Amino acid sequence: MDDKEALRVGAAVRRRRRSLGLTLAAVADRSGLSVPFLSQIENERARPSARSLERVAGALETSTAALHAAADSARTVDVVRAGDGAPGVRRVARGGHQLHAKEYTGELDTGREYQHRNDEVMYIADGSVEVEAEGCAYRLERGDTLYLSGGVRHRWRATEPGTRILVVAVAEQIDATYDTRR
Image (tube, rainbow, N blue to C red; front, top):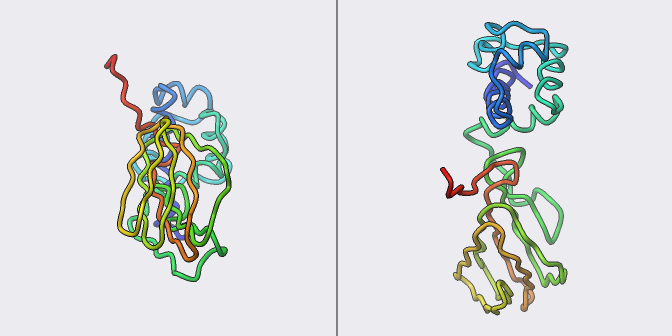
């Protein structure tokens, strides 16, 4: 990891701290690090040592690996080549980005039911797919798109050889749910 990328862990630290509802002072108490130093980390003006980052991660009830993975979302450009990945299923976006994207190729029928926390879009690039969602059946053809809001139970299967499906969803680590009480 180069210096420029290493600094991006600050945004992940800030997001995690806020998701827990903690103040900088609370994280300072838990980690034994100073509030000004934690502020510099979050604002990407200081690069924490491995030991300091471990202390921050512990205070935030997570791991340094999780903070590094979440820091990947700070990247603005990442190329995934067509040949990358395993046959049948390949990640279209890597790391802890805010979007989760996969391409499915071939006649897939896992029979598995899915239910995701956040919204999802399924685009049929080639072939056809049968989807069951909320008690209704949908047949999707090349160029069709299906939108599923978070929490909708669904299952799908490709019905033609050479079917290619792109599924893009808001990543599970992102809280994109709408709270009507706010």
